[in-house]
Image (tube, rainbow, N blue to C red; front, side):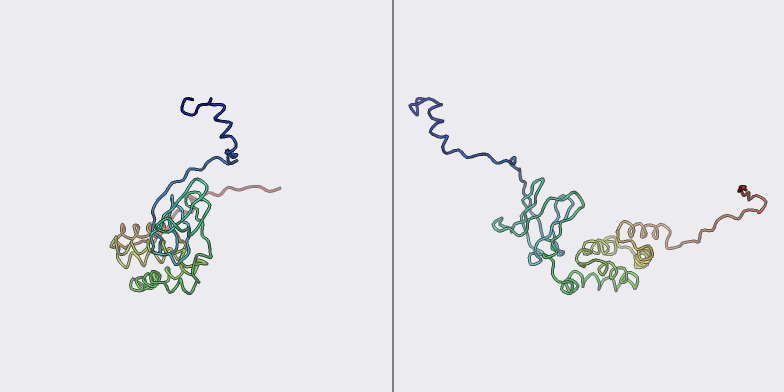
Length: 216
């Protein structure tokens, strides 16, 4: 090596003392994305929710994530707000310490707004919304569902009657999923609100045959 005046082996012997063992774990590749903290104190990543302290609700953040870990930082990427293990799709990682007290949650602007609009729609819709919030240990866990519920009314322009019907059926069958609520609305709209009692057909007694079994 003309530039160094020695062989490669001689050069390596000089550098050997500066080498350190490699990590036992293989290097983990990370990706970055920007996100906004939802009023429920969570960000969404690959169809899963991850919580951050509630004081950061409505703020922009940066998310550094790999296959094993998710790190949520402030919008400048300089301060770590939360660290979570990566979860499978539709599974969430919620740190209860990140959420405000239940009383504070129920007094939040977003929940109060939803309850006010539900009241204006009808008694059953308000009852359904109250049930959704009260059935969760932390009311904010139901916030996204209830925001989706109001979109059926505000964005899709469904009638109060359709909303009340869907709320009644959802309460009757204790269904939290919005898929069921939406299905009830579609059923109501497709029948113009007219539902008929379905009765089994009448059969003549002579045409009914019962199988007799002999018992020993």
